[in-house]
Picture 1 (cartoon, rainbow, N blue to C red):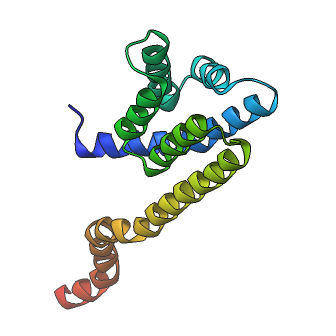
Picture 2: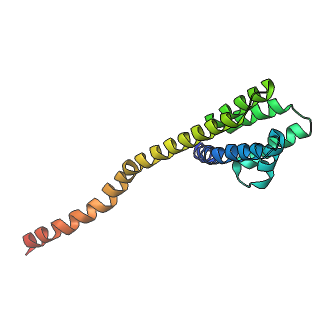
Length: 157
C-alpha cells in the first residue's frame, strides 16, 4: 500500500508522461499504424511508470482477459490522473464510432501538458512558504546572535 506522498509522486509521474504517450500514439497513427499497434509500440519501447501501466492494459486485452475498451477505461481509472481518464474515454468513443483520432489526440496532449504545467507552477508557488519555517528557525536565531552579541558584550564589560 502506498502512502499519500508516494501516491502523489506516482500520479505526478504519470501526469508528466501522459503528453509524451499521447504524442507518441498520434505520431504512430500518422505514420500509418493502427491504434493497437501504436499503443503497443509505446508500451514496449518506453520504460516509465505510465508505459508500465499501459503495458499491463495492453497485455490484458491482447490475452483476451478484457476487451480493449474495458482495458483502456481501467487504465484511466487506475491511474487516478484526469488527463488519462479523458484520454481513455475519448479513445474508446473514437474507436467505437470510427471517428478520426489525430486532432483529438493533439488536443488531449496539449491539455495534459497544460495540467502538468499548472501543477508544477502550483508546487513552485508553495516552495517559499515551505522554506519560511526553516529560515525562521535556523537562520533568524543565528542573525540575532550576531547582531546582539556586541550589545551583550558591552553590558558585560
